[in-house]
Image (cartoon, rainbow, N blue to C red; front, top):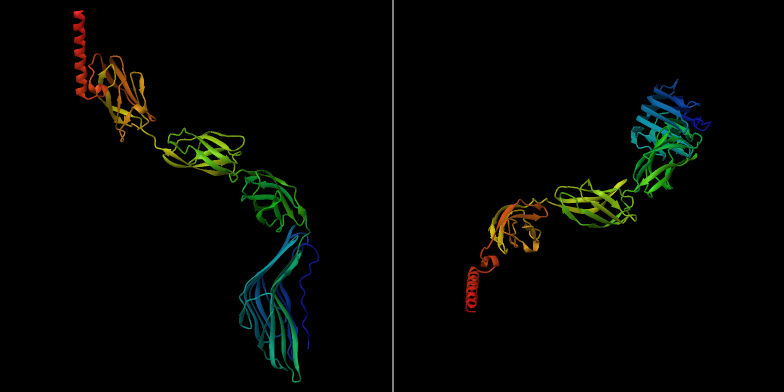
Length: 514
């Protein structure tokens, strides 16, 4: 009986070392009257001691002088790299088959394994599950699986070929050894007197190993952008040296998220956490130490503002309405927009509780009001723009004349008259809105003329939208007083006129008698 030789992983003599192998055959044994032998390493690289990469591609698997072993396949690529902060290795195998004692032990279409080591952080990975053992498809894992197949061996009865298969991804914070497939082979049977077992050795497919380089203190030179919103969420890039995959980034002691370090360790990206408005110290920390802080500025973005009032809430589409916004947290505000258009005359009180601003022109309808901060906005409600009303116009006056004593009820026909908000100017006087009756359709109004000297008097109608064109009302001297001019029925007016005449005659008659 002969025992197969154990296979040790590549020696890692110093920090920063890395190595990779594609296929390693170490099969030696004498089961019964047969012999098994196939040894050799195919595709083997070690990272240069001074730094850099060593690699091999397209290496054929062809053991020298094999006995009862047939191994074929190709090592697609093996690489090993020594860097200043990270060392790494990888191995990729394609189309490998192994026959021992006439039995197909392994059939693999493609395998890959990787290893990466930096100060305080190591990782390993393996891909490829298209693996068959004794013709049976399996899923490889780190738990050893045992498979057997009948085999013909001279000098043994009931002989079986045994394969224990597993995947090894092992390591510490400073080194890692990754083997995609390891198969330990043996033969068992009966030699005529007693059961016997013969070890045949092992086969390794796709191996990578590395050791962490010495930890070095990181440095940080720039951060871009150097400012962002107080609510966080801003992606930043930090440049420097000595950044390792386990690097952390803090802003005033609060950890950033999504830290990703570049392969060469000279830059990283991170997402800012929330902070307080103002300067913040940014520090990068690795196993080698912490960098001096870089300056970053948190800008107000409106998340700290609270709006409690907006007065008034409507105004003309032409703009010009002075609006007051009340609340808190307005101290850093820089302006106010209405439907995205900046207002004018912006002011905020020292306490940050009151903003005044003048509305810009905008189309009629609702407009979202936003208080603008250096890094964001805060909604302040809705302001409604009223349509721009047309200036009033006069088409006719009826009647268009009356007595100098005033009191004539005049109807003006035209357009743009506003109930409750329309005045009439005549003879240098203003008939107030309370004395003007406007029709619901805004097409006519009535008022009473004031006293005025004889002659033509200008008549104009005024609303919030403007003043109308001019029309003329003629004041006539000595015009008899009528019921219409006094607001009385015509019959009453005639009665008053006749009564006045009788009184006048009676007075004259008395004077004559005296």
